[in-house]
Image 1 (spheres, rainbow, N blue to C red):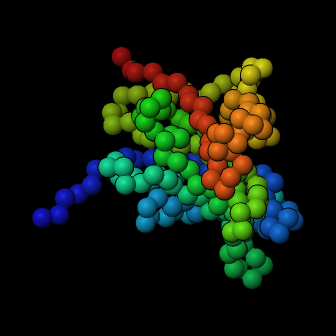
Image 2 (cartoon, rainbow, N blue to C red; image 1 turned 120 degrees about the vertical axis):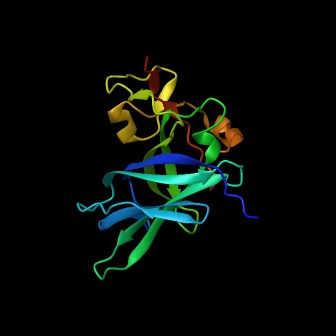
Length: 201
């Protein structure tokens, strides 16, 4: 007898990217993203303006098993050539623990920035996303972080666009701390900042 696997519903927004490079040269073509969870994939819309700092602001919904079989979701950024072929810019591998479990309960909106790396492991830009594990109930209201939030002295922006928006922040780390924490390798780790929510009465 086959049993269905219980799943979480995720709301993923591909917000933007910056500093996209291919062979160390800025990307000038139109770009888009592919999100993969287990064997499932979804494609975000094409950034029609093109260039190395695209803005998508495209929300997608995907499901993820809750049995622990999935430890990462991946995002691939591609550009489209004049001939219509799609070429890789870079990948980011996102640990599930970055947006759920522990201090990230259901209903919290996590803003994250990740370093992209190409097939050779070289840096190829930064991608900005938000991820939320949708709550089971229907009586929760959400509020986004205020655009007037100013980072304290002990925090630094994950990316330049994050600094402008005042939304995505991570603790500062020295070079020695970064090595110990796993920064600088081929797998990047994002640090979430969550919005608040209110239970309706």
